[in-house]
Length: 375
Image (tube, rainbow, N blue to C red; front, side, top):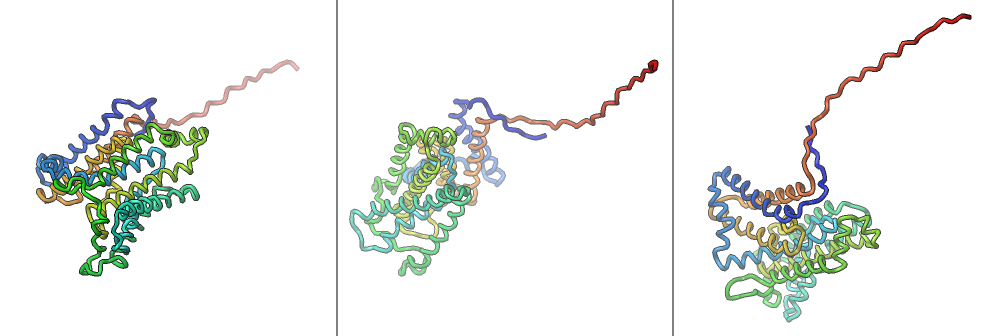
């Protein structure tokens, strides 16, 4: 017996809307079972995951801090995925954006004017976009698989970050810790409401980016080009759209927003470069993008939800003593159900039983009738 996927004649509009909620519900159920198998109270575990982080005002600020890079990267990945370009290396583009944007506060610490922070943000965007252009170039020039190249470049970026903070950029007064000098106030991203919490303007950047890309996708010719080339490259070529230019456009947008997320993270929440600047935002943003249905407005809400799992995971670690790997498992379960729901929207499952082979017997030759006539 084998399983076949039969493409549906049309996708259900209703289930396209409710499938993220179904996936979330199934994730909660499986997550409760997972906590029970770990010997933890499932009700208390889910409480610490989804309710406890929202009870304090400061928690909302922490939620915004963690949601900002997820939304920024998620909306960029939405452009890539909708144009049928699979950027899996946003984590590396985030890191390179953080490194390039930190050149000014680390190498020129005395440059402290009103231009310092805007230049840092701009350099972070350029760094992330340039790093995203590498798999785009390899795909268009050598027809390489962008999934592999973008993913492998993540590890290159991580090694570069580790080298600079342990080597040339290490703080000489940092007691030999692998970190750069603390960024100056002129190089620090300001907080939105300093009196109530430490949420910074990175969250504002994320919301603005989501709104701008939603407008582009829904109201502009470029958004139409993204959708057409993503759904039918052949139709896009007939319309005069260039697939190669779209590859670069998608990767530059995605890499630039990831770079902005990186420099916003180090200049806001962290305040310096260190070996680890992201708990995996670039990979989690893939879940954010699909959970938001590749719609920038939906990604705002899915980014907040995934940020809540980070906060809830920290609360569960403290209160229940579970491993931080549980957070990754929870997010992985959510991605599995999101992709499974999308698959069932587009295809229906058919079970096929093998047919027993029968031996075919050759037909016997027809009798030959011999007649005798008179000579």
